[in-house]
Amino acid sequence: MFDRRQFGTLMLGGLAAPAAFAAKRDAIATPLILEDSRLWVAAAIGSAGPMLFVVDTGAGHDYIRPEIAQKLHLQQAGGAVMRGLGKDAVQGTMYIAHDVLLGGTMKEQTVAFAGYEFGNGLPDDAAGLMTAGLFTARDSDIDFDKSEWRLWRDGRPDREGLVALDSKITGPGRSDLYSNRMFVQATLDGARYRLLVDTGSPGTLLLGPRAAARSGLFANDRPYAPARTRGFGGDAARLSRRVRASRFTVGPLTVERPIITVMDPRQQSHTDDDHDGILGLHWASLLNWSTDTRAARLWAARNKRPETPESYLLRGVWLDKDDDGRGRVADVGFGSPAYQAGLRAGDVIVSPSGFADALKALAGRAGQAVSLQVQSAGGPPRAMDFTLRAYL
Image (cartoon, rainbow, N blue to C red; front, side, top):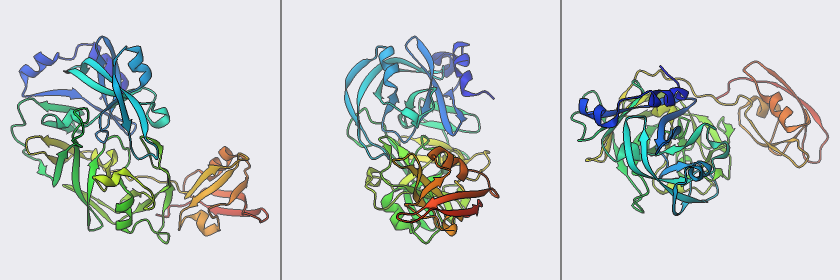
């Protein structure tokens, strides 16, 4: 087993050249790494690299950091408007790269990248994103057991051991620059939802606004933990919620009592345009996937990766910073220890007095005691004590 920082060593050390590799097998195999809740592939552009890219099957096209594109003197090819879960549309520049070698095994003659300033939305060592086109242009496997992507040049000969999913591989039909993406039907608490398979999303399941409303899971009398949803365009306009559902099923994978994220039904989101939500990497990595491009569908099998529970913040409180640098409560999850102690949205934490110290006081594991001084609008400061515990 190797980590993503060894990709470059493997590539420079002479992994089999694409032509020679393909001659020995029906499929071209390229290494993938699952690390830090991201799926990674290495790529060299021309004589530069190798560089690390996050595999994001939910993105519309490939992305690169603008400073890297400029350093490599990539050809500019117009602009692109990028939209995602964030509240803002982003105008970016398209770049054309030639001779892109993926994983030391497969070469693409031309790749179009959109330049995007990722900020803290992507690890610093990621040069950008590679999108679903890796797997939807030709029959491919994403094998988490073997940590590899296999591309079948002449179509996959059989899919023994895989299950055909109620699914669709399709694209927006707007431009050749946009990749076809992967959609699958899943069941949550007995209701069906159309989900985008999104390896760029680290979580389990995210329901968009309309689907969240239909599910009934975004309810003020149901225990929840406030959460911030973030994607292209920055933060979503409204806070989302982490909630516990009863059962989730997609193909051969069933998860009992899962924790999922639901967006605020009052929020506008283009996510509702062609899918109900996102199947994130946390669960997508529990399946080995295969794309059938001729039939435009997906196949999958449960792999050997163990199911691990998704976590949430036990404090059940989301803080924003007020004008005086203190922690102001944006939301308190119903059923949380803080809610039961009387903390409410709009309250200001006056002790600890700073935003960072207030966050630190609220952090911790089950059993940790929390002591605060809290002030509601127009009222005097009051003491508040509670103990963190699991409540979802």
